[in-house]
Length: 94
Image (cartoon, rainbow, N blue to C red; front, side, top):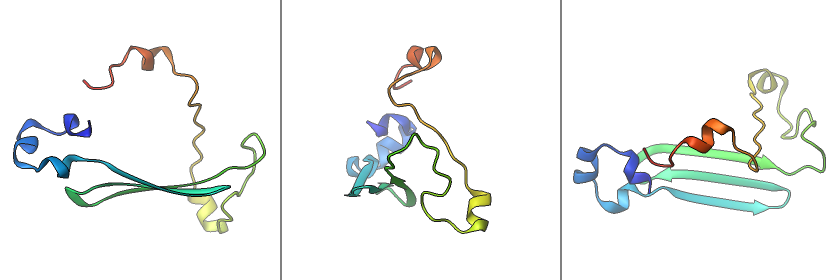
């Protein structure tokens, strides 16, 4: 349903297949590589690399990054089991 996020004029001219979000995931436990693409926009690509560790997220350098890359890295902790009150009030598609 990503096409609901596009402007109406774009939905009218774009083919239905072009407004699909394609997710590919390659799992080789404990590593996962997920790629999201939009065929309509050939340069749009999001890649997420994740590693499952037997800890509570305290490992400092899970991906073996260089010191330079570690300085640029941003760690975001996600709790997919709980939503804030503000998120609960939001509609999925506005």
